Length: 407
Image 1 (tube, rainbow, N blue to C red):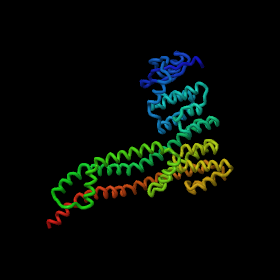
Image 2: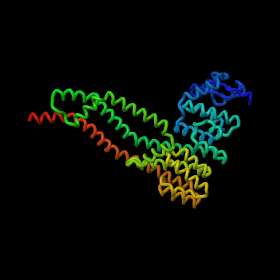
Image 3: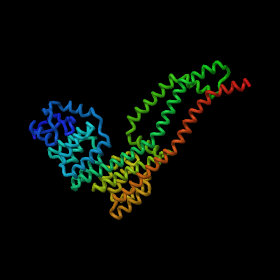
Image 4: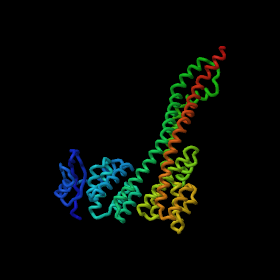
């Protein structure tokens, strides 16, 4: 192992596309042979002279791989393993095919560890923060049980379900956020550019302005110091959130507030339960022990309220209580979850029952998102119309007063 060296290479694939990367080999000739075995035409191979420091800087320059990138790569890896390719060869192909440079570097590091005798789960776990805990634990179970490709497919399915939930949340929240942003910009634009024009016209008319109009003119005249204050408050809020937002006490309070919102609260609760049941069902189906599964769910829940509830459930299960009983005690979980969990425990099909709950909750998330969009659209139109219309009425009120005096 002491004679293993790192070589950087430039080669072209069968489509003529240039590929660059690094490879561990005993000699330059061994590196060239391995590249040729991968179907690459070698352009240049030389011993890497970069220090560990420069490698780390180059490694951190690229963006971290997204969940979508990882899901696609994991599914491709499972397909290649099913086709009979070795794990090392499959990872070598992924290094070349992956478009994300960071992920390509990660697969290179994983392949090197495999070549040195490490298992895939251990090699993945060494890449801190790169692979989701769910994937690492499923791979570990797949290696132990001899069903690695099935475990990879299960992980990819779980990631795809998570991405679908995230896309649904984004689509439900996009419309109100965009409309409110446009409304705020429109109000600021009117206060800065439109109201001063009307103010000059009001001075020519003489007389006393209505209270609503005077308020609007006063705000417009003070925008030079109101805007910096608003920007400073926004920056301070962002800074405080970045500093204290991950504090468990703050996160739980924020999550409680989200779940109690009149329109979106139900939606956020459904999203949290869908994630919980999907992840727990996937890990249990892959053979991960229930206590370890609960810890994985806690890490991937995305909801501080659910995380706190899972902690309490895990304590009860560790003390010999049934999971259904513990779930029933937690208000964050609807009765459907505990009831089907009880059926699953009685029949020995807990993973199947939880997967049914997950599928049901995913459908509910989709339906709730559609209802929210249908409800929010007219509501936002009314709100924006009231704000903009109120400003227009305030600007024209003095004119109505002048016309009444003339008549």
